[in-house]
Structure formats: C-alpha cells, structure tokens
Image 1 (tube, helix red, strand yellow):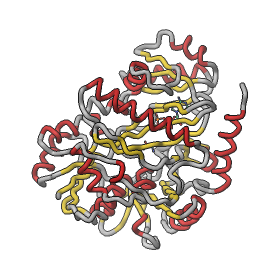
Image 2 (cartoon, protein in one colour):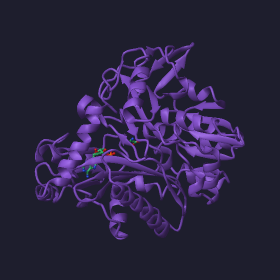
Image 3 (cartoon, helix red, strand yellow):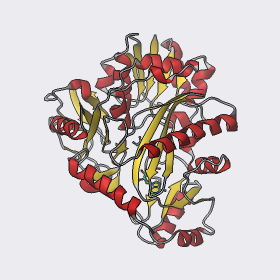
Image 4 (cartoon, protein in one colour):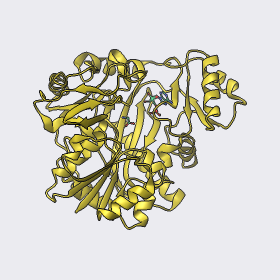
Length: 440
Ligand code: AMP
Ligand code: GLY
C-alpha cells in the first residue's frame, strides 16, 4: 500500500512513525516544504515544494500510485487538496474544502454552532467593517474580549484582551489591520478557565475520541511571552487531564459529535479525517475556543506515541466509513512532549543555525520539525525545531524523561522546562478549583 503524507513537520514525522509501525508495512511517500531527514528516512520518494499547489501534489500522487493520502497541515485543506485527491479516486484523511471551514473560517464556525444549537460558544459578533466595533468592545468590557481574523493568518490572527491587547484603542487598531488585509473578523467574549484539546478520528459518521491533551501556547515558562505554535503538551495515563471532570470530557465529546452531524447536514458530505476540538473548561461548563480540521502539533506526538492499534487500519477504516471504537486502543500511559525552538522564536528567531542531535538516547521519540539537512549537517530553519516525548506511568515521570532528552539536543535553541512539571500542573488544578468554587 502506498501512503502519501502531505507536510514535513514534527506532526508529519509522528504520522510517518505511526504508519511505519503498522503490520501492513505501507510504502511511505511525502510531499513537504523542507527536507526533513526524519521523514525522508522512511520515505520511498520525497518531494520538496509548495504543498498548497494542488495540481502538482495531484500529479505526484498519480505518479507514485498513491492508495491513501494523509493531509497534515490546514493550508492545503483550505486550498481544496482533499477534494482534488478524492476526485482522482485517492481516499484522503482530511476534510474537503467546504467542511474544512470549521478551521479556516472562525465566522463560519461560530454561525454553525448557533444555527445547530450546539452549546459552548462565547457571545460573538462578526464584522465586515469597523462600524459598531467600539460599542461591542465596550459591551464585553475592558478585559473581556478576543479578536479573531476570519481566515488563516499563520497563528497571528487572534489577540486576547489583557494578554496581547491592553486598551480599546489597541483593539481597534488590530481590527483596522485585519480589515486592511481584506478580511472580516470576529469579536467574542473572553473565556476564563483551562484549555484542552480533544481530538477524534472520524469516518463521516462514527467518531472515536483520542486522549485529551493540554498544549502550551506561550513561549516562556509560567505561560509568559508571545503566543507560539505550541511549546509542548502532556496527556495523562487515564486519557483525561488532572483538572478535568468526567463530565467535562463528555461535554466536549458531545460537542465534537454535534459538529460532525451539523457539517453533514449543512453540506450533505461526510467529514473524513481528524476533528480537533479546542475547549476551555470553565466555571460552569465546557466552552468552545475553536476547531481544527487536522491533528494538532504537538498533540499528535502525545497521541500517536501511545497508539497501540494499527494506524494504517484506522486510516483505511476512516476512508471506507467503517470505523469502530474497538479498532482504536491507546496505552494507559502518560506522555509529555517538549519542543526545542530557535533562540528568539517566535518573533525574531535565529535561522539556519546548525544543531546536533547525535546525543539523543531514544530516537524513536524524537520528532524533527523546521529543520533542513544539507551536506550531512542539520540546520534549524527558524520555526519550531524538534520535539521529544517522554512516556511513563505518570506525567511527572514522563516529564523527567522528556526534559533529560531535550537537553541532549545541542544548538542555539531553548525550550520550556516547566511543561509537565508538578508545580505547573498543580497551578492548573488550583486555578480550576478556584474558578469552580467562586460563587459570582
Ligand atoms: P487560535 O489561534 O484560535 O488557536 O487561538 C489562540 C489562542 O487564543 C487560544 O489557544 C486561546 O488561548 C486564545 N483564545 C481564543 N479564543 C478565546 C476565547 N474566546 N477566550 C479566551 N481565550 C481565547
Ligand atoms: N496545538 C495547536 C495546533 O496544532 O494548532
């Protein structure tokens, strides 16, 4: 079986590793944006170029006689790559363009939740120009709003009051900037609580939920500094998180299920791929931050590293509409993933600096991301560089493994020492307890 992976980051390296563990021994092919030696090592053929250029990817897929494609990142989904592959008879993991709006358009998603009475949305309003912006900001209050550009902006399209925006004037200015780029935007209520990611496999009808994961967006320890693509993440041995109740998980799962049903009704098309719900556990219930139409990065590393079942079988069942819960088993183990990123990341990262991974002790749990190989040397290209995963009975034991391992990656890089440590997790638990006990 010939399987094509689209994308060349750590998430796609994790996908490649999961495929390689399959008893079916598929042949792996990859279209990526850089030379990721981790993925190249498993690939029959590897093409580097623009993965959003649908016709080129299609030509590669035909040339390589691909039987199944997996789309890693969101940008090719937005360009309709899944539609094009399915139209050529190539079953694809990743929703078609219209369905992918669940990630690519914040306004679409908020309206879908409203239309189908799916609970959990914050108060929101969609803006196509600047009229009434001031009034709505005032209504939500000084620290009570979030502004989101409607389309994909490479992680730079969301700003949160109190964190990134410190006055109504700054907020208004950000809205002006978005309008100048030709986009509409959403202003919504700021939710208070603890964030978590709940992903599921979906065959168009049946959803199978994966272990819950908590990502860390902020660049520096203690959740300080600018937002990033995600500096690291953890999951627990019971597949929940230490600050979540059983009911929280159930609510999030029900919301994911309702979204898939709503998309099916709206477009008459099956959603085949990964649905990634990004949620906030709040004082009273689970609320929706956003959805992604793909695996999370770094969440994929936590989840796939403890997947016991055959990933090829899961993918085959998804595209055939035959997914069942018994097909998907995860080890009852905790994971901690940590990312090493270039000094200066995310705002002014050093670029094309040499790194050394030769001291790594467990290469199976090393995931290469924004790196390029040239003349046998490895270079960090400026975005997140490489991730490692610790797997153990407890989060804290997994953290120690990940921390020791990430220190074996040498170069002008940094990482967050605090992800998965006891003090940080305890802070999350305390925060949630305080919120839940608070009467007003
Ligand atoms: P996004 O780019 O949509 O993933 O959003 C980036 C981050 O903004 C999220 O991970 C949250 O930390 C934060 N965020 C987005 N929407 C909200 C909201 N309504 N309330 C509080 N935080 C939010
Ligand atoms: N973990 C954040 C993302 O994949 O978008």
